[in-house]
Image (tube, one colour):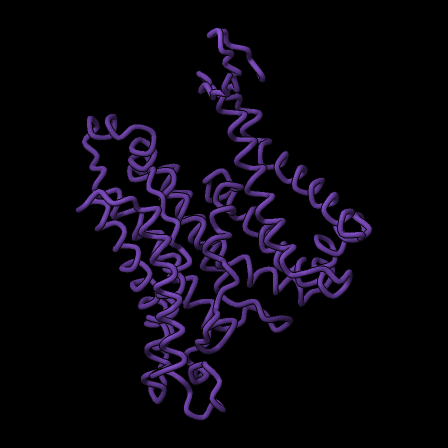
Length: 362
């Protein structure tokens, strides 16, 4: 006896739309059960986790700060995944983008010009794109699995950042702390409003999401992404190149991850340090799938996942739980999103030893 998955001829459009909402509801129910097992009041815990961070103006600014890199990275990943190229290394591209974008304020701090910040952003995008080009090269030249190579490059990037800030880029006046000098005012991403810390990264994220939505919806390149993602053979028949699509999708997602990296360092931190991300590059994978790989849906899901970061911090103070609760919520959300999608796209069959098939879910 074994269990098999049979792909449905056509998936229900209604279920495809409500799948993310169902996943959210199941995540909340599983979270309530988790808090109950921890000896906490589930309703109070969920209120602290998802409602408290929305009641203050300053926390809304923090929500925008955390949503910006998630949206930027996820919209780039959505192009990769829809073209059937699996970039799992956005965290490394985020890190390299932050490093490359920080070259000017760290190595040439005496240069005070309005050109500094635009050049930093461009260098961050270029660094992220080139780093994503490594798994693209390995895939197109040696047919190497991009999932493994992009993921392994994450740890190389993180170790390289750690080596820099503890070595040649360490601030000589920083009391031996592992960080670079603070960026000059010309190298800091401006705040949007005087009421909080939210900066221009959220604008970059929204513009990128709208631009890629327009590309996917109205441009030939978006059609090419969709066709090659569904059938490489059909794409070749239409005159599209799968090899060029690997380079396009990987470097586009790397550039947006790099922009997210330098925006985070320049706008929120103000210098390089060993840890510049709570895992945005990995969380953005959840954001992409929760948003149905649609840039407009990714905007909403980006704020939802950003809320889990804020809620985890608030829950630590109000109900005394570990910061690992945030990771648990994010993992539950990804699990339920993928589970709902699996049951929508596939029919589960129980194959008996006699060869008879029994539908478990029709």
